[in-house]
Length: 155
Image (cartoon, rainbow, N blue to C red):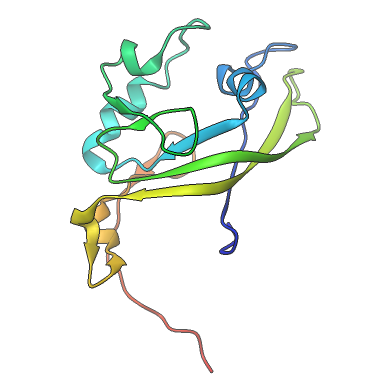
């Protein structure tokens, strides 16, 4: 969200009452993160990494996902990702607790670095069809791009 400066927003809800998700605990230790955009072919690895691993277990290692170091932040990015955002935490907002007592929050991260694979750039612009992003919908549903078209704003 937001173009200048760009920001990323996500919600790392707690694992249980008083128990933060590993993502949240990592942000408390190092207030930086990367967002690796998932393409269709990386969907199975992304899904495997969503397992509830014990604290301290690297999803990269447990799922055999190759990683590359960040340039401007400590956390790595997924090596096969065709695009990734390096972010620093700007703000965390506590939201009302969930019905089961878990903490609920929103993290806003300022994008400080962007990686885009040369292969998805066409005429100086990212070609979303080449990026082949996997999108999270509702429930356990995911989607891919259908028809991509440009719709210019009036005036």
